[in-house]
Length: 555
Image (cartoon, rainbow, N blue to C red):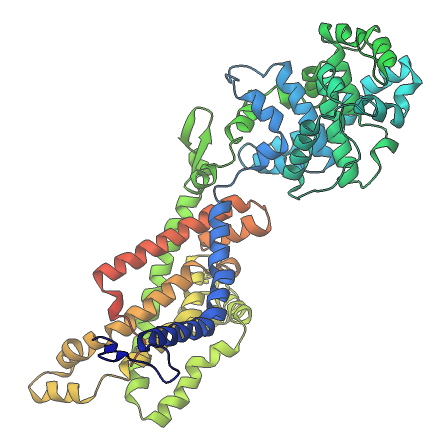
């Protein structure tokens, strides 16, 4: 239909063409609708989508190794893994570990790698305390040559190259970036120091170490670089540079600040830089190839290691391998979680269906009064209900005392109903039963009683009328309740933790342990991701078999 006539376009009341006016009205209507649902969308995004996305990211994120010991990671790329790494790798580890220890981040790296190889945490912690002593040997040697090496201003002038000298901005920027990765913060502003280009070429290790010291002093310690004596690692870096035969030749033609001091140091016999021996003296475990393999294996920024651990496998330098039989716990926990959640769901169906049927077929006034009994558990704390079952099910509890009093059980043969799977099933069935009754009740309310009367009038028995007429119409309620109960059951951890003991806990208890106790958030995220995938697969299978459109809560 056209919005024009022989005399021109059809106009709205305000004089605009009708088609344009309609488009404007529809657009305004959509904007109003979006504004109404925007708070809900934002809430879902912040409280639901974002945490799940963060969990999925944490399950593969592994940037802590590369951010904490970047030079070591680079040196290990060509390591064959056949013998303990050479001196070059240990030197890189020294400078990486020194900065990490100053930032107090080395223990986090040790804890991360300790998940893969026991003992790594202690290795990083003990050596992190000794890195100062390793560099102090060289500091003492330089200060014996000249007391000028004790002066902060001398170091500042020497490493900046003096006024009017071209600065190596890139080197400083790299060290600031490295500090940002280590501290997971963003730093901006003038450090108050730029390494000179000439001195950076002659003393590359010293310039890098002093730049890292300057960035840390300015941004983290918030001190003035020129007023602070450099770290012991800077002295070690200078000793390393002076070991190069070409350094003395380069210094002979250098006339910048501290040139005479550096030439004097270059002409003096200095302690040999042997970081490999220093590390092994600090902790003999640095001589273990397994620890170096773990560092190299988990050096990439992303890893499948967490997911492999979650399915009782591990990532090694040789490839993926199955864990030892006595270390395979997660497969058992996943199977137990699925099995017990299914048993709890079936128990809730068996107990809840008769209750829902009675409520649906009683007069409304009586049904409403009885519904209070169904809802009553919601008015009591979950912790209180679970603790009550712990008291009732224990060997000296109410149930065992009653059985002994009735003579059904001998006093010396009291039943063990707590700290096992039975206790978890009983307690969780009681807790989740209302979630099964309510959907079934709401569906059963919509089934007309006349259907049963018609079936009986046609000759059907009570059982046939129920099974062939009533039950099929109640299946959507069973489906809705089953999905609700099953999904809630596999995610429970408070109740299994209290009454489950060692054989009645779920995979969710292990997830909670890694989040709150071991702080292995990556493994917890991987376990949670697998659990989410299992739920989605079961949901998909249910949709294919039953049809999710047939699931309803009444109406």
